[in-house]
Length: 611
Image (cartoon, rainbow, N blue to C red; front, top):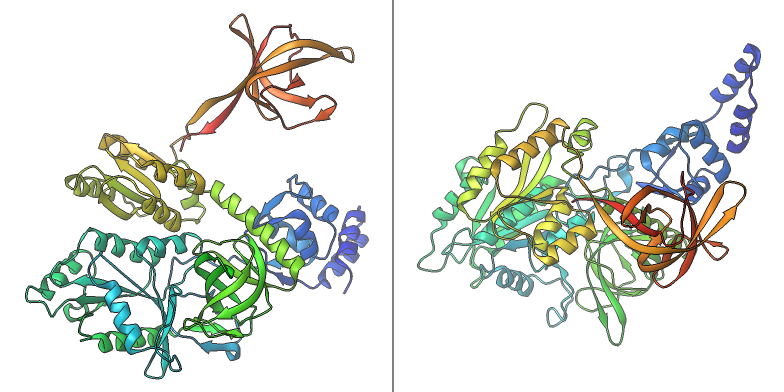
């Protein structure tokens, strides 16, 4: 096959006659189109390497399509799809984030002969003191994997039990916050969620919150009605409460399995495991063991003697000792692996939890592990992951762009998380928002509750691509910091009509973004230099803050603004710089202004979108 760079060069050289065009067209017909897998965002130089051509040719093709990019700039998946055919490639679509279900990437396009059954991954959630930990301990003690002399020897955040000649993997997460934090980072780790509800207590606030988190993840729910051995137990009340929250149990004509259990005595635990096995069998959980290994971080910690210890749940492929890996934006080499009993492991298979040693830092729960061919590839992948995460944080959903996203098919509804001041406001706000639904657009309330906006709400907003609305309630400082870091929008309202009006206008595409002006620094002009016949450079000293290359400069004279405009050149001595900080001197030129005077004050401004 002809080299792709030659093909592009031929296209550049074509300039005209019908016969020549016919020759070119036949040449193009012979050109084989190959599938190309491209991440959500990729640097131009990496894209050129992927398509076996030069960065110059890639930049030229982007220019033909009306885009200007430099060699180090990052381009989005959809733009790559536009120019790839010119190089003989067809870009494969991104894997859809379904919000839950399978732990592994889609296996639809995999060779069926390469697929193997894998154990289900189960997470247990519920209200505090309803018996989650006791239930986990009972399952562990009576169903540990064969070969573990003396039972479980250590806690690694995930473990496997052997039940009726089949394995079940349990995630020992501290609650739905960790469950959602993993989802927020793109890790769909749970196949089945066990909701524990105490028969003597019924559904409590944390239970309701857990229900909303699991619904947002879209995974099957099995309800364990615990503490049925207590005299005050009332399982029927729990079933009614579940029905009120759209969880209709099977005996009432629904599809939710609800089982009475006693975590303390062990009664009903075998029935619970039976039903987990049935749900897993119906789901036909499979993984491709021939692919490069991929996994997800369950937890990570620093051990004084061993360094960083990371618990990984393998998703697909086989993870081996010695593999070069990238975890989130960190990288390393697997020096050793241990299973949940502390025994050494050489090869880990899908749905198997293992501790690994050798990662360069401490990753976060939910970070994705991938195996790289060599150390150089691992470094490139880690850098790419870092760029992608920065771009995703900047591209979080806002109320202003929701209509565009719905029209483009990026989202099917406006996802909202509502926090109100009092319980009595919940139904009023919920009913009013549901009244805005139409055939084309709808409001999806992911979670609604009373109380302050917390970090847990922000993580749920990140995981479900939702906007957080506070009605007569405010976010805590931790929630504000996390929302700013992760790009989650928080809006606060005191009047319900203002909330409804903004949501209605957002759905109609009429809500304009709001910006605020921020003063970055002040400088005083000390000397003026002539450059050429007309251009002047203002030599200045920064009194406070900083002067940036991308600032808008207000020239103040006697307290009056005589000009506002962008910086065309910024220097520190002879060097072009991006910023000059307080206490330093520099020189600048402004677009469209030369009438500087000594003593003028330069005030640097930037515009920031209000979130």
